[in-house]
Image (cartoon, rainbow over all chains, first blue to last red):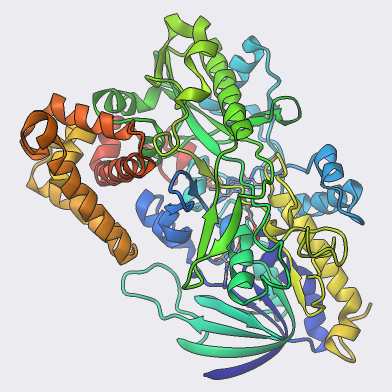
Amino acid sequence: MIEREYDVVIVGSGAGGGTVAQELAPLVKDGVRVLLLEQGPRLGDDEFTGREVEMADALYEDGGGFLTADGTMTLAFGRVFGGSTVVYTGTSLVAPERVIRGWNVPDLAHTDVARRSAKFAEQNNVHLFTPDLINDNNRLFVEGCGKAGYRAEQFPLNVKGCKGSSLCNLGCPNAAKMGTHRIQLPGAQSQGVQMVTRAEVLKIGERSLSVVVRAKKEGEKGAESEWAPGEYHVGAKLIVVAGGAVGSPALLLRSGFGTRLPALGAGFTCHPAHILVAEHERPITNDVGHPKSYYVDRAAEEGYVLETCMYFPFTTAKNLTGFGPAHSALMRAFPRLQMILVLACDKAVPHNRVTVDRDGKAVVRYRFTPDTVEAMVRATRASARIFFAAGALRVHAPSADPPLIERRDAARLDELIAARHFLAGKVSVSAAHLMGGCAMGQPGDTAASVTDAWGRVHGLPWLRVADASLFPDSLEINPYLTIMALADRVAERIRSEARDLLGAGAGAA
Amino acid sequence: MFRALAEAFVPESAALDEGGWAEAEAIVERFLATRPAAVRRQLRLLIRLLDLLPLLRYGRRFRSLDATRRLRVLEAAQNAPMLLLRRGIWGLRTLAFMAYYERPEAAAEIGYRATARGWEARR
Ligand SMILES: Cc1cc2nc3c(=O)[nH]c(=O)nc-3n(C[C@H](O)[C@H](O)[C@H](O)COP(=O)(O)OP(=O)(O)OC[C@H]3O[C@@H](n4cnc5c(N)ncnc54)[C@H](O)[C@@H]3O)c2cc1C
Ligand code: SF4
């Protein structure tokens, strides 16, 4: 076992961990030793090929095939330097005021979240695209929304030098997407924060971590680890856990904190999503141009959000319901396909939670509640209306049987798309907005929460959480800016407590 | 048996030559190599079960059925009351789609043309 000693150790390099690294970096010049550990590899710019399975394998947990315990939903999250920000689409929204108010976390005001979100939006070059960069897939969505009576809003995007390759979720091949691996992590590293990749934290003990550093396997993408392969025992005065909504609760549970923190793992939400597809008569520009420029927010009224999207052949094939000749015919219509992603705003319920198996591996227990299924059905009907209003010939709706709805049946959508056809295990459902598991709440209220509003774990002043797992319920909108805002708060509190936490000379309060 | 299943899930795969099959199967093998041994065991078991299942109804194994009957067997299984069976079919079809659509030739066939150069390549 190799011994190492640091003042602060951050676990994870995604939206949360990357933000904390940047915000604690100024402490380094005061002599504070800050280390960031990331289990995934660091990829070179030339390694982003846009090939689906190859990139998914290199960038996602379980190659993008991580399933919930009963196998009915795929959870997508990054396992790479930069975390899920390497694969996100870059849509940058501020949390709705009503959601933050509804969370009811003492000492967490929407104005504060909004102010900090604006800071990161500026840092990440968030802006609206000009009309010449919008492809037909997005344009038809706006047109269809207008005709069908839905209000389409434009997504602010965090890109610089986007060429419109439409490959965002396979990692940007043009280094145009401003994830933490592009902005916050390099900035922190240049100020002296040490970063070690391929370093998985197996367990956290009292002010210490057990870490395994793995060697790069033959044929694997990414650089070798900065440390020699082997087992490490790392001492730390302060540990910040930012392993994501699956990774953080799983790490804390396998470290044995579940007994003193019964809410650990609870309250997992994820915006379960369907990919809907519609066929037009003529080819449209869909696989060129940024894939996600518009959305419809019906969260408050109907419990769903619709977003434009465009996926790759295998992902599209997998997300359509069924197989055989009808499925193939739709795939062969690829140049004529329009796509919409429907997301349900699920609510935290007791049975949906992160647990660990005997080996300490994360297991996500998730069942679709009737409310979530109804929200997906409403969202699917709305999307079908939008598709037909935009001129589509036929629409593929997972919760219809058969899933293909012809234009002549456009008046019967309410009857054809119904919850009784949502057969779990048959319909494809995936989720990429993973939230909760280490919920913020009232200080000391271990029955209902894991941390206070500043990510301080109840009763353990040396342990902080700073990622999507802090959400006490779903955000009902794309989450990364809010995660950065919350992580910013966690880092600010650490800076202000640095003298007490880290000893004399550490940081100026 | 995997080929018989793949041809039912993606009818075009019946037209693959030996080189095409080798490429498709290598994609799946690479993917499965990184899955836990238990998952690979379950898949093998499911494939065996699906091969034998039609004996009850058609008196023949899956691999000896014609395309229409193969499709019928798989459709019944994907709508089965047992979640485990539905999940299994979902998993197998996912592998068949991966095998077929991850090949660059398939992208060209269906007209998928995304490249890193994006708009530059089209305008
Ligand atoms: C395909 C996709 C598209 C998305 N698009 C958008 C979008 O357009 N807009 C938006 O707002 N959000 C989007 N999201 C969601 C957003 O990316 C995530 O919500 C956000 O990145 C989560 O931040 P996080 O810090 O909680 O976790 P992550 O960013 O997932 O980072 C966690 C990191 O911790 C590491 N880790 C975990 N456990 C350990 C351990 N034990 N030891 C060492 N390292 C560990 C992981 O490898 C990972 O790199 C998308 C997500 C996906 C997957
Ligand atoms: S669309 Fe733009 S941001 Fe997305 S992968 Fe292509 S170049 Fe990168």
